[in-house]
Structures are given as C-alpha cells and as structure tokens.
Amino acid sequence: MNSNFKFIFTVFVLFFSLNGNAYLYRKGWSSKIGSKKLRYTVGASVMKTYFNASLNFSKVRPQKRSLDKKYDFKKELDFYYEQFKKSLSPKFLLFQADYYPFTNLGIYLKKKHHGFYSRFDLDKDKVWNMVEIIGTKYKVPYQFSFFLGNLEPYYVAEPKGVKKAKKGKRKRPSQSGSALSGLVLSFATDRLVKLDQYTNKWFNLSYKFKGNNRTKDTKKSWTLELGYLKNNNEIFYDGLSLYLKRDWASKNDPSLLANLIMEYRSIIPTNNQESLRGARKITTFQELTLGRNFTNFKLFGMKFKSLKIEGGMRWEVYKLSGNDSTEERNYYLIPSFSW
Image 1 (tube, helix red, strand yellow):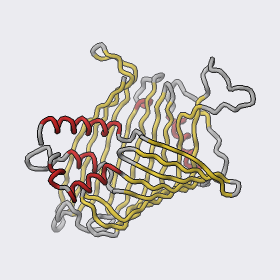
Image 2 (tube, rainbow, N blue to C red):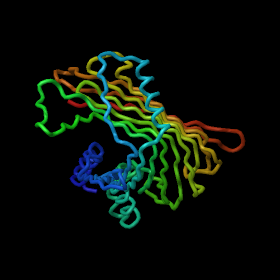
Image 3 (tube, rainbow, N blue to C red):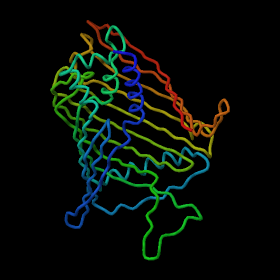
Image 4 (cartoon, one colour):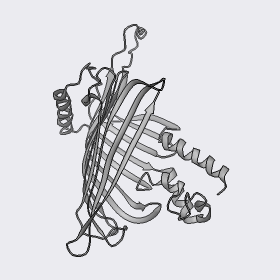
C-alpha cells in the first residue's frame, strides 16, 4: 500500500474512531394506539444505524435534578436506589433493530475482495489491519432488542434572564439527560470472530440500569448490567456477565469522588466448550479500569475544558490439560481531553 493512500486512510480511521457515532441522519415521528402514543425513531451513522419503536404506558414527566455544589456519597446511593425501585413497576416498552454499516463493510471486503482488504495491513505479518481495527468494535453484524422497564428524562431550569415563551405557548424544559432501568432481551443469528462471520443463534437476557445527566457544571453517567449470554454454536461460550461503570465530573467540586471514573467487566463461562483461541478453555474474564476527570486547568499555557485519564488491567484465566491453568494480563492507559 503506497504511503499517500495509507496516510489518507489513517486519517479516516482516526476521524471515524472519534466521530463514527455522530449521527448523519436522525428522524422521529409518532402515532397512536388507543390513548397511548407510539413513537418511532430512525438514526444513521457510519458505525451504527438503527430503528426503534417505543410505547409509554404512563405520561412521561421530566424530573428536575438539583445541582449540588459538593459531592454527597449517601445522596448518590439514594439516587441509584430510587431508580432501581422504579424499574420494578415497568411503564415503558421498546423494540430496537441495530445494523453496523462499517462492520458489515469490513466483513464484505475480507470475504469478497481479500486483495483490496489486504492493502490495509499495517505490518508484514498481517496481524494488524486498519479495516479490522474499526470493524470489530461490535461483536455482531446486527442485532434485535426488546426493553421493558422505566424511562425517566432529566431537565434543568432555564437560567435567569432567559426570555419566557410567548403567551399561550408552553416552553419545553431543557433536557439534560435521561435514565432507564429494566429487562433487556437481545438476539440475532450471527456472531463475529474478528471479521469472520459465523452462524450462531444467540440471545442475551440482562437487567440494565443506566443513565446520564450533563449540565453546564457537571457530567454524570452510570451503568449496571447483569446478564446471561446463550449461544447455539459451540465455538462460542455461554456465560454470566457483569458490567459496572461510573463516570462523574464536576466543575464545582474538585474532590476525588466527585470526579471518579470506575469501570468493571466480568464474564464467567457456564459451559466447557473450546473457544476459537485454541485448545485452551477460558474460565474467567475480568477487566478493571480506574480514572479521574480534571476540569478547567492549564497545561503549557493551554486552557483545557477537561482531561480524562484512565488506566486498568484486563486478565483472562484458561484451563489447560488436567488441573493446570494459565493466566494472561494486559495493562492499558487511556488519556483524552477537550478544550
């Protein structure tokens, strides 16, 4: 591959790695079933294209969230508990179909135009390929999902001095985020190993608890997902999965807990099939990431809005012949910033 072509495609890779989920097109509309409103949304981006239809069994009332100047651990726990309680009385149903354009393009190029695909190899041993690096972000070419639970939008009051709506018109509150919690069933008939597509009827049933709330002074996101993955194809292992993530940043409070990033992922296989990694059989997979958000600081004379530094460890344990086992560990550091 000539150097100019490689440079252009490298820029393309970096651009869409950062902006691939920025939607090129998004359209929403609605209809009625009886007295209930059925909403539809279509969205398209380079990395992900989707269609969803949702139905709320009760009127959605935006919740105003107070912007605390200082972090309070008890308030955070109470907030999570209230969201969990609401998921026990589901009032929101959603169906979504996801299709991943760049992933499917990579599958097509590797299978039908391997010579062209090979032009994007980054090393002589053909271990790294630029199309594969981006295309394997998602482990499936497409999927379908049903969600049953609770949806709650958040808003912040308009600051003083903002003109009120004209008489006779209701001014919509400014939405700052939303939260959802409930059961998710995802399924499809294919899965990927890198960019090789395998027929596999799979489903993933999980309890999901997530949300985000972003204002002028704070940025908060949180996720809890506990589920079970079942595969029909024996080359993929079944397993229990746990995923936790908490990413907070505050301009008003420089304390560690108000700006802490924590992410944990664990998969415990429940079958004893051999994976595509070889003759070894995986027994556990764990990943732990810790980090911190820094807001409004200067470095080398440049003023940054935020700096995020994350680092962690990923480790897998494999069972070998007999009672022997081996462990693999990888360490990583991920800085990112905006100004």
